[in-house]
Image 1 (cartoon, helix red, strand yellow):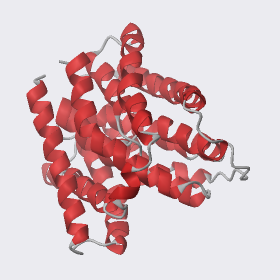
Image 2 (cartoon, helix red, strand yellow):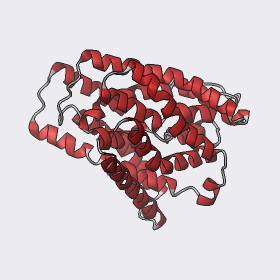
Image 3 (cartoon, helix red, strand yellow):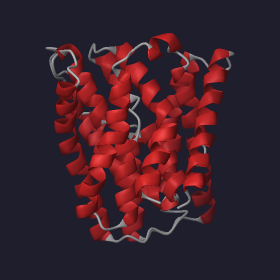
Image 4 (cartoon, one colour):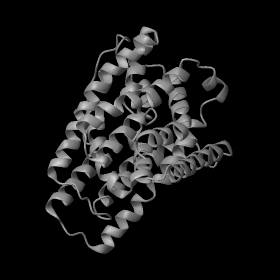
Length: 308
């Protein structure tokens, strides 16, 4: 794995983010179009990319490895809230914001940015395993995530089980079915699914840039607590996590995917959940912006330190 190639790929992704930012500023993209494209991304193109991951490449891992990925994913999402709680106490985050900070620590950007980044670093095979992590993400974000977001706010917790069956989860189940049964998909259908899935990476990056264009830059850079938080979340935590993960994960691909997943910027879900549960929407948006911006440097750094 050549770190120069990874750095170039991250720069390419960032340039597409910058293009999305520019397109919003010149009004070729707007808030209403962003909402429609987001729905298209989450409901159509990302599910297509997940399914195409088992159609366009040979997944060499067996059932035991797949079950192990599920186990690793569950372990990560059970441990990260504890780590998030420790971080907010160390940083002396005000109680009303503690739930949001813990949420942002636990839930990294797998859906929008994770898939294209994993594909860029590890190839198509990584998309299949990232889809498994994304299934677990959805399971936890609509259950434990709701409770975490409401921590310290006094809001009542409301869970909707229907949210667990998102298109991404359904696509992940279909991908698993194809993988385990060896169902033959006609070439024309497989290539069509792959073509639609390939739209995901540029669209996701454009949408991130367009979304970030809504946030005044002065406000972002004046939120001082975000700086140490970003360094802790995207550099210090992965550095501490690597030797621990390395003790339990022998497969280089699974180890790399897990480490990069932990190193990803804050998920856009932080803004959505802050909006839904009366959290600090501005803080969530600023943190998404800053962690996404700095991930162009921090992710290649983690790759260079541990995965090259």
